[in-house]
Image 1 (cartoon, one colour):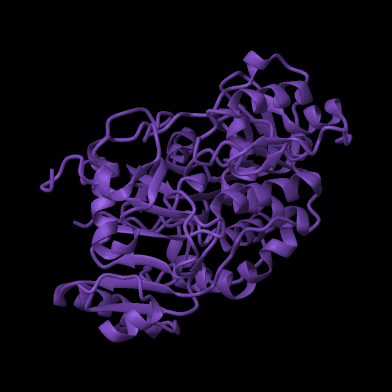
Image 2 (cartoon, rainbow over the protein chains, first blue to last red):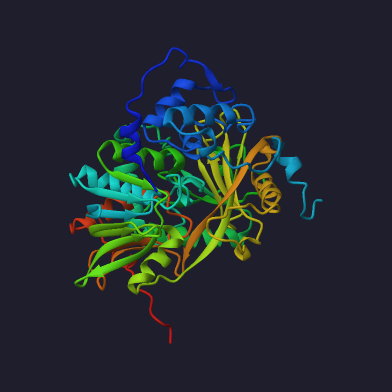
Length: 109
Length: 378
């Protein structure tokens, strides 16, 4: 069980850093500072961060930035990277045109 | 001493977070929200098409849905301090056959009786409103005050705001049972043995609400249904309306981000046999959805899909939720069985749950949604 308020008190307020402007998620243009700040607003899981900031929600679905985001969250929360649950991978493996995906199964196949 | 609250809310989805926000806004100091999973909004709150609509609904739902659209949605982004992307540019429910139009007309006529501005329009007017739609469409119902919003931002917005107002949130807090003391509901017992105590307990935990309220002798006739959605890459700005079809082939809209979000199914979802905490998609749903969408919006055939996902719906036997104090368990308030259309109503439901917890008169009459409305039919 995680007491959100207790964790927020423990990690303290968001402190701006020099490299906060770095783009971490290139697809959706999310910076390190935005991710760090969101953690201090109560977004502790990759699932919540993806929904709140869209990091890892673009064309590459986090294949590029997934590890980086995990590292930033772990540091901000003061936990091991292995304690941060990664995002769920979902179909399709690569962005696929609707017309092509629609060829799979059904009468048209 | 056990952690104690004025109100304990079980379920950190949009209804629970909204109830927490409206309670905090009313000045209730001690509110606790218990979420079973690790993430706020893990269930249906983040797994829906984002519709904020009145049209196509059961008349029992319309009073509170209409209240929310008139009084709560328009100011929600400002109130919560996050952009919930509320867009009120109408809902087109499309038909391709005379039978479809008959169905749409019945729904529209019923909604008109309770004061909703919804009307049937012909092929030309559909094309005028949305030039990207298929020529096979022969008519639609049109409700100009419907729209859509971003369910991810709305859910987390209620969470973030209420958290900053002092609501206490616990994640990974799975409830095992409720317990009455001296005839009143008092304790919420977690699977790990932790006990929370509250004056009032709101249960808004989707299908899992059943397992929770059963421990105090209450049940709601529900089934569960697995629904899937997909999102495309960003597209140029095309149209702002929420779309649906008479046949329920798909529903969806273009988001502020530019991507399109559509919900759809392949017909096998009803038989999905997996635990509620699993949400693996069916491989046949994505292609079926693409065929359905292309059949209505041919302009999207080259749009690339970047992701699909799924979630569980809590389907109430009579198609509308239970939103009700439970008289036989004093202190218990129940909100479940949203049947796949609970997102658009969530701000109003949150406010009403807060009013029920405070024993105030609710903004609209909710007696049609009572927990004890299910009678045997013979």
